[in-house]
Length: 275
Image 1 (cartoon, rainbow, N blue to C red):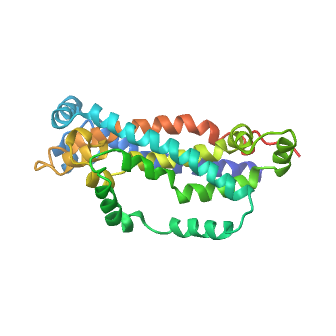
Image 2 (image 1 turned 30 degrees about the vertical axis):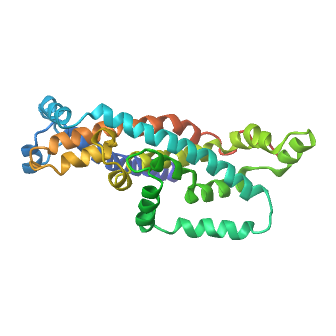
Image 3 (image 1 turned 90 degrees about the vertical axis):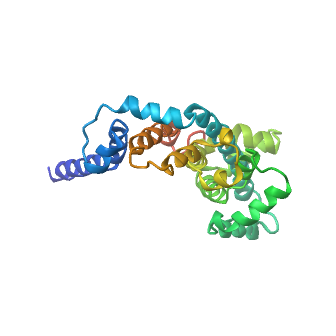
């Protein structure tokens, strides 16, 4: 009896916590239907009837769909590059023992602790010399080097990969690249899906680097466009439009999370051999 009471209390606490976490999202959607004056003067979870006016303000200030396309052109390739190259790097660090391997892993851990903003000035000078300013290339290619993702996937692979599986594949004559793509990669999918969500969100919400490197309004990503609306003169009346633009910008993140969540909640050792 006591066990069931504790279980009920635990589930109730989790439901309440989930609702509390969901409240900011609900408030964002509600405020996207309200005027800027209403948002500034009152707090409520009841929708208003200014959705059409807010949409006209957003569409009149910038091309929202163009910003969507620009952000997707950056976020999707960057996420794919992060996932693939981090996975293959993590596989090499976890499976192969070579001279300098521990030092290399230590370097990766150190780079995890260095904020990216510290290298922004040098990065901009490099991009300027390469004549890649106002291009999406510097926003995509650096995603190949993701120390945090490599670290996580290496630790994940060490916990789920059976070395006997690799030895059996090598005895059968499989090459190392074939082993990675056909055996190891499927085992890593839950971990890759988890990190891909974070990589996509980080790339989709990236503001500082696109703001510095992109100087053509037609190439602006969605966060930069929304920030331009937020920095306009009539900020008070634009609040509803800003909430609407932010609410719409969350849609791709929800889609990616919905797609990847089935891999996250799947068996942590999916594809591995049973002992």
